[in-house]
Length: 183
Length: 455
Image (cartoon, rainbow over all chains, first blue to last red; front, side):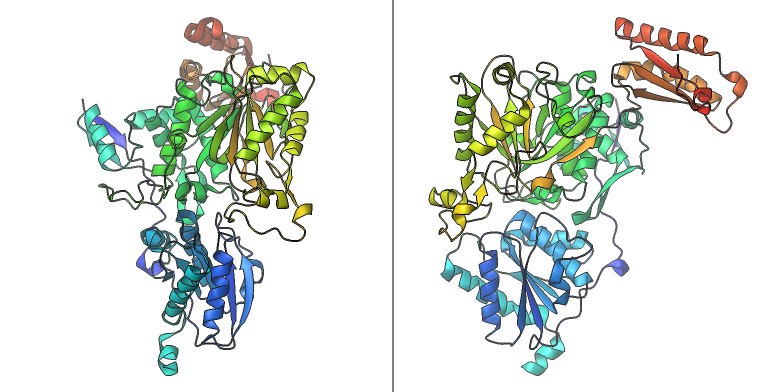
């Protein structure tokens, strides 16, 4: 006997191309700016961000604000404390399912506040991050991808990841025109 | 809300469809027909497009109809649906780490504790095999929650396996998964057997007559052996060793102790309250951060083991939960009549992450499905004259039937109260015989007089 059934799936709110959010304008340079290093308390996250700060300091002169965020939750409406004082922010780690996807949705929250942001995530989560970015309405956001893993590395390996992330910084965070004139 | 209707040739075709689309957990489903789904919405008194909450991370509005469809698929009965609704509302409360449950490489799942009269009204099991198979309400409510995570919240499992044939994006990245991801930890408190051990919802500030769910993010459980312990103190000492052995001492989290009747008897007989149990166990599991580091445990999730001891670590302490308070360390009586196998469930998330919700079941009332069905002709008869029927439960087993007048209500059409009572009593006796609940009838004029006088 034929049976009529109902579709059990709920889609995310539809997103027309016109509604898609654009990332914040990129930096002209990091020189003289305030860089936010926000870690999600995963193993090595704080140390990776410190190393990224050190590697960036070889190319730019800037000041740093440090912060902690909850990778289990979306940023509350009143933000993350001092994060609004930053001209740019780097988030880490994105080397697990919740921390990579919550990392990108929080990066989108920062972009919406006008702060260019770079999440550092690993390749096993590229699809999950891309899908999450689309669901949250900013499909064009980019992020730094470094080799997996991060959490279990010792200092040497972590330094390599920091260098990998910093190599991607100009393309992800500095406006193309500014990059060209600096070259 | 108008979910797409799909025609399938027969029952087997429904199963093939749901498997091929990735709409099931790997097991067969009850076909969610429009008629069955409508019964669920009636049972919870919800419109199809009522929004239970919003899943921010994926921008997903959660509507009653989609939740009902998945509850039907899981094998629930309509009268279970108010419990499912309360669980879903709890998981969408701000602060509950639902995104962790839905996306983590850690194999977290959900646990829900049900308290209050609805447990018995819908036949939930707080006795033997409480967390296991066998009881329709326990199992199907838990499975409904999982199917809702899968189909409504978009948590499609499969990471690292070959790409799923259905092509849906894999967002549940559980590295190993766990058996409790099929139906969660369905915890039901045995509130009756040891009255001195106050039920959890009452400890949390609800009335005994309230029905509630408390929702937890759970990492796993530890099954322990306390058969040889002769005194509460010995029991606490043994249990503390097991709890510490899980490596889950925390400064900010929560823990759940499932206390079987044999052990509950030991404590109740010695005059211990739940607060006494919590305090003793908390103290016995309390260790300095220095001790934790030196013992090779972790002081926090995501910390390397054997971290160097730092100045001040001797004076900082962690224990099995953030505090011995009832909202942080849960002690729940449940399980089979024989055996001293207490469980320790270790959670994840901060102290605020356990969310408590009152279950709204006015429409389902104390009312098992047959009671609601038996009153349907009376509901229709009253509706013809623009009177609505509202059912609720007074918490003591009395079915409160309130008749409310709509704007077009015909004042002369309502029969005298004693006659109406007769109609209700007969309908219920015919449907459920001796199980018919006592009825308290409230008429519109009772409300107008400012009293709740009822006969």
